[in-house]
Length: 629
Image (cartoon, rainbow, N blue to C red; front, side, top):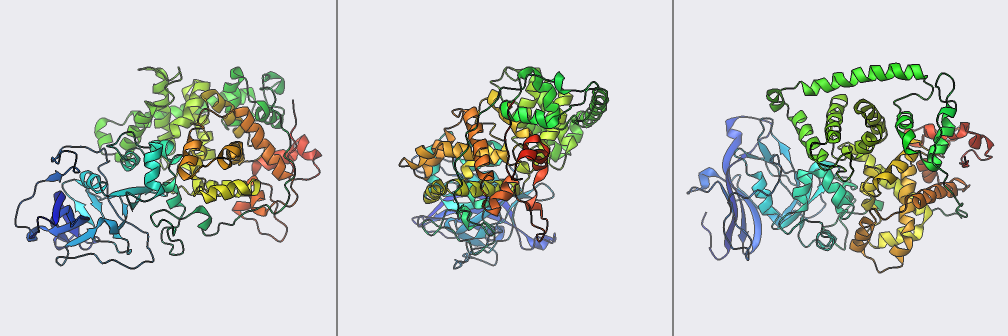
């Protein structure tokens, strides 16, 4: 190709990139070898591919040119930290005028990077990486297979011109935005999301998605907001004031704007009680718990003293049945110990050679080893090198992969295990307690992230009923989606409170009192505790995110728990509470004319409340009347 030197600048070039004209066939004719390039034509960057037969010269294997001002030298050995199994595609269609891709031959193309809409990583069955690009007109280009590697370098060079916005709904999907795309780029700069000037969030997300979620989604939430939009919905264009930003939560199909419309009444005053410090008196002569509901009430009201946590947690997390005798629990422990070690042997007996042929197990092990090395290292139980606590943390998580291989290990699960292991200090008991905990939250870690989207929607419903003014303010500042609460809900506030506070919070949540979604009320309590700071200040999108993120380790747990319970009582006592709010709180009882449906379940917690002395004494079946020790 003849180029005008003044108008043309080569930024990146890689050979050995095959264009597949028919991805469903493996005939030799369907794979065309060629070059992939990033070039600037008259200052406009573009991604180009041309077949090898059109080239009259040899090209270097990898060429990367730094930005002007960085020396202008070529660097063929840098490693930006991307995982090697990158690729690109999009399932998102946009209703807009199509900008055609320039073609210089039958298959050669030149796509301006400003017209690249989205990327999706993928991997060929033989281990080769491939990329499929989709333009903003919604037209995918043929797959590009990288037979000699180079996807990491290509994407690093692309990031010079565009920002890639990952979607938690699909870990392989990324949307492309210009660097000056409003709040997105401002959030990076103002919140110092990047560790240094030479790294980027996309690199960190691909390398370590959940760790980046913990550190980044609470600060910059455009990523998750993109996931709240259905991928091919033409009815949800990007916002008019900034077409690079995802649409808002209240544009989600089926989302109903909730305003209470009635007077909620005064918020009751709530007090906390002392921690549960008695246990034997609640057992009958054979060791059965005589009044499980009373135990749960006391735990919810004040927590548990440290010496009793190890025993009572096993009941709260379902390892021991509440009606089991001491002898039955001893027998159960023997059976569960044998079962645990049978599963542990499965991964311990895998040889290095076998593991080389099991990429899934190898991936789980790598993630676990990386997370174990950085989980709660400030705690003496996990601090220092060659700590036996770290070995137990590793072994329990690896064994969980054998127990639930479909889910396996997802980053963040180590945060859930470490407090349990700290309390039980027993490998077998901590494993079975973890399985009980995961029964409650496993959907948070599923790839679809549907459970997380649903919880954010439910949180919005609650907050709109409680405080429409606060919601209006957040909406006005582009923060109405509440996606900065993502990390809170994902791992139940583990990173927001001190280690000791988390023990108290979690044991209260495990009682499932006063409702199964009490963690959402905790989130409401936190947000309302910051109401004056948010509304009374000159906050914008970025400063709201920054303020919420800086609440970490600064919140008073007892005050937050009192506020959350008071919110529940206030809502439960409202006689005209919107049905959507009742459903979130487990208060809605379908009329005889209504069909039962999964989203109207009252849950086990409400049945416990109905059977409790407080529930029996209440005139209104929806009301939760607290009792005190």
